Length: 81
Image (cartoon, rainbow, N blue to C red):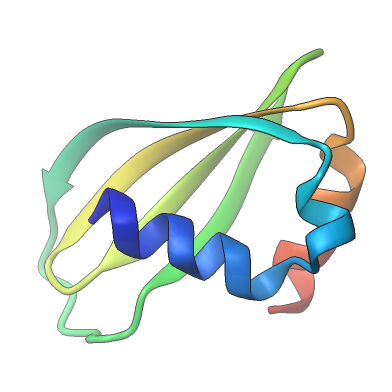
């Protein structure tokens, strides 16, 4: 799921917008009862240097941490997708 999540983030953001992203770290994966076949990213919260996202896929949810110097752009883009 990590590769799919990275592709989804890459498709949502332009090359210029991705330039502020320093790293993407996948975290724990939990199983869900979701029947959705589409990958969906939701913004959860921000810290000084990173954003926590939740990546939902078919039957799973994964925490994702994005290290960035511009959380605001990431948050705005994910709210529009």
